[in-house]
Amino acid sequence: MRTLVDITGAQVQALDDLAKRHKQSRAALIRSAIDDFLAKHRRIQATDAFGLWGERQLDGLEYQERVRGEW
Image (cartoon, rainbow, N blue to C red):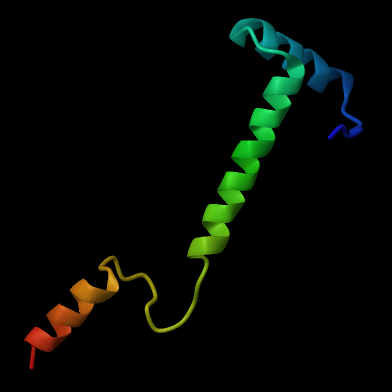
């Protein structure tokens, strides 16, 4: 799919410089940047939670075994 995006001249120049260094097209760099952005936001959404678990580092089974061991 093609899309139209307005970017500044400085952004175009920076992309062209990167494209030359990495021997890729400007479009390939932009697709890669979009993939990275989407992956980052999927990770954040998947781990974004609240509640009693808080900042615990153990997984659920490890935590359960440790707590039951205290009985």
